[in-house]
Length: 447
Ligand code: UDX
Image (cartoon, rainbow, N blue to C red; front, top):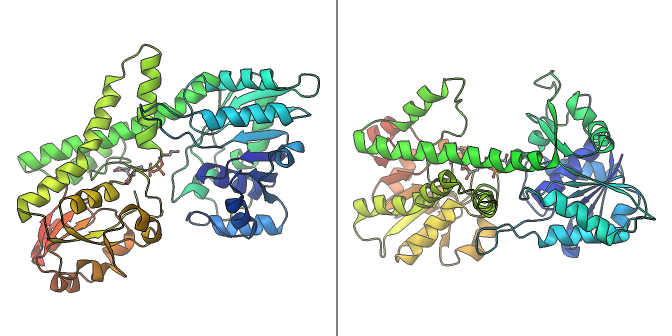
């Protein structure tokens, strides 16, 4: 199938590349010409494991192309995916101006049938607006449109695997033709008939559930899923606070809870809270849409409030140990909002470093992938070449992102390098007993 992807951010680039990988002809469009040139040259504007190889191969084999010209992108396409950004406005609402603009341009430029698929995370009822926009700006004599919602559930760091081996594919449609096209497009993934570029033998053989709903329900599935996962995290973080007060261990509590199949282990990791460009903004946008529809989603406002209190609480705990932060040297391991990405957006680690700097502390930061991006965000931090340099002369170390490589470090060396062997393990990466037996003053979260 010929597919056009508009917007080459995380979602668009991964979706476009993976759709090419399973055999479609894909053109990715972005009005950022510089980014398009980078991509045309086979280079990556973001770090996402495995994506670079897939882009290079599909470019080489002519299934994937990049252009800044929307008309060129949509001309031959049957399906056009809208994957542009929906950043938060001041009041928490999603800014849909880019979605509207793309819909308008697709309307104006199309000269044949198009299935227009919204893949950006958008508030419920956006599909209706896209449909109206296409009708108003499209020429019904030349073109015809179907609109569909096809939310993505990709996690940064494992986006390629998530796309090719999803738990489910959700499509919201109003017309059988749209359902048929989307089913055909995803057929290799549903039936797992493509040659998997990640696994030599694919882990599962059952077909992937393909859920067909109306457009509004599909839109809600996306927001409700993210909001539910965020709720799990804030829930366990609140339990962690209680654990600290009563002397229990949240890791054990989460394990005990998670063994109940109805609850599950996933997303019960206590820590400095959730970040990234999805959870915080989607949560706020969901609360806003609900509010606009006359529903006060108090539960989610509380989930957000609990999350926002995580970093200030970590700072308080440091102060309880260090008394004054001014002129203290604090090593920080991890800056990305989670491991395996260089994304710093809404990263709790960055919020923590900013607060430490504002208190007058000297921050020695290290992250395996996000150093370059961090320079613009926390310019007055000292950027260390490796994790050891970051703890050299430090009065405390904060583990802010749980990169696997931190687990294998020489902790005896870390202890010798530090002025005071105090660790605030904001992601419960290390074994508490082991750390204490090595002579560290170890503070975990909820333990
Ligand atoms: C999320 C959703 O998982 C994905 O389905 C959606 O499409 C986009 O948003 P992502 O933002 O990449 O993906 O990250 P995710 O792995 O979900 O983690 C989000 C945040 O929650 C991170 O900051 C992570 O550190 C935090 N987290 C996650 C916890 O604090 N505890 C957990 O148990 C899980």
